[in-house]
Image (cartoon, rainbow, N blue to C red; front, top):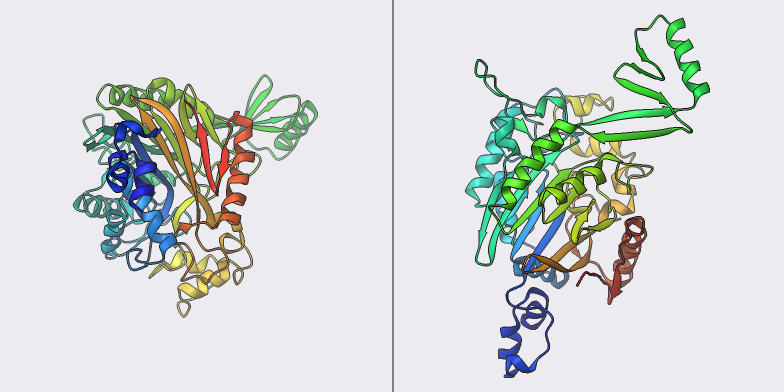
Length: 453
């Protein structure tokens, strides 16, 4: 294990000590000055990780620990049910025992993003309690705050090899969890850092005319500006074919870009990360606004862009020599073993006060035959390990992980290194999804490599 970590994580002196060979006589592409990241996707934790001892789990943990900086999206709230659930959640109301945050520290993580669709599940108090527990655990966190300015700002990790900035935001969220500004005469609204976007539905000329006629016949109010109309918050315009076009909000983009530009001048590396469920033609394709935003963040000075949210893998792009990960899938996905759920979750499926969490799971997923449990891709992901030298990206190592598709609800959701056949399948999916971005991924022994230098 010591030798493997030496080769992977840039510790060639261990290799030399292990064999008693002079360092200058060995051609090792990884240098001790290189900076390696370990990047995970979504983490919804409800059960301890640190009790397990399988080699394929502990080997993954050692890889994360061996990185110079490790990141994951923390899509979980930590409290003891002091706050009440909000009337609206990010899908279900996530919460875990506060002691579980220590398992991320045990696993080797240093930084977590906090802006996601579950940030406001238990209101401002739930957000604040989570912030307190994460801070007490010693993890750098970004994406939430007592105001929009605080939620936007970069947070910094100090390491022996360099300083890393983390900037977090979400495009998917209930609107009540969005942070706000102050004019001086009212308090700012605590919450998350948002990236809003606009959506335009392109329709044919014939469809546009029919839509106008229907709205007029129903006497519904709408705005009509030449060949574009807006009704119920939806904008339609005439085009050659049916399509949906999304564009990042200009003000949000400019504000976040300014934060990135500032962080670039204060740190060696800048991670910009977003929680984005929005998709293109399929869940595995990012919506149109996301590549626009990601490239703008690289232009502003980001070292890398990390997406999460759809719970499946999306493609990888190398833009101006910097990696853009549109989604790394899940790192921990234990959403079926929550201790409690609010009444709204049960009522949505016609359940009563006599029903409990397992009943909710059975109703939501039709006894495991639909939804997350039935979708193999939810349980297949990668840990991405970009390696930099002197600020330049050298390569990206992609380690496939298996979260236990087809196992019991109380077992699945914990990552282990994928065995070779599954690893090759996962990487094959990632290769296909990265092709539109012109990215070539080489596969060797069940591990993916993107060579840049």
